[in-house]
Length: 367
Image (cartoon, rainbow, N blue to C red; front, side, top):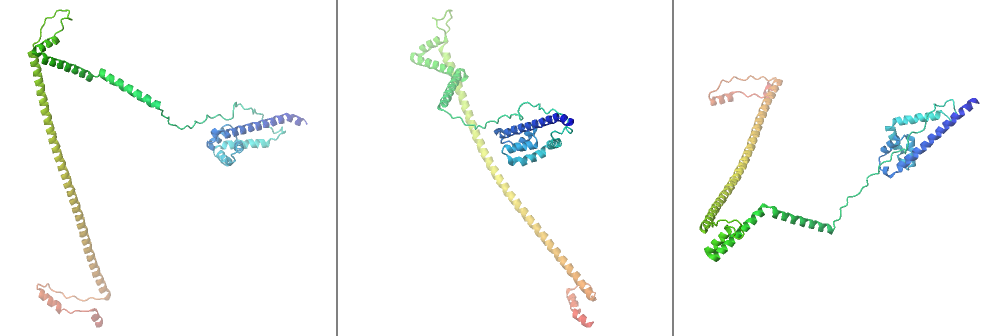
């Protein structure tokens, strides 16, 4: 009785711990089900889901139970396979826990394990919230309105006008053009005055333009008018020089044109010669190729002739050998008369006719 009364509080504590474990297991499974129902992780691979749940402390049975409650019972076998491949230590830990729970029963105070603190130090949800996926938005082209066209055309016109004005004001070409225009107007005015009033008027106008006006001058300046004749003579000399330079430039330009035409003609001739040379080279190459083919053909024919002669010689030697072998087999040993070297062909023929001709049948009959 004393042992039973002493062991009762420990059994109650163990039962409470088991109930706490069951409650935590239910919480873990429910949080895992919520995690699997989350649309953000619906399309993630199964291996990633299993790894995440395992990192949160869920066992294989709990993960399979969560998949079953989440309506994904067809994936339980694959989950078990993944857990068995990647997480052997988890299966060992779960098997050890199951053995301990089966060994110690409620109310058995003698076989109780040492008291441990089963309170979880983890604060917050069982799985870390994942950031939402980026919204898949299609890049739609912005519609262009008539206001955009108006603004663009106005900006282009304003920019072009500003650039034109800046070019007119600051361009050295425009400054020179304005100076030349002023000089031409001045010369035109002086020429018209000379035509109207004669030399006297022209000289007076030149004096007026050459010296400052007497009314506006504050300091007396001696009048030193330039004569008209030297001025016109200098202008004429300058014009003559310009005309001579222009003529020389034209002559040089004509010479340049002629030389260019000659060079173009020479270039055409060279091109024609190059074309003819290339054609002749092609013809020579074709001839060389045909000659090479002819040489190869002749070499092949000579080789064939040599082979034929060699085969004929081989056949002749073979026939001679066969004849000698047959004679040896039959035991024929006919003495051949020694014929002296004949100097006269007619005597040689007579001697050949006088020799007896023996046949194999005669030889057999004699024997």
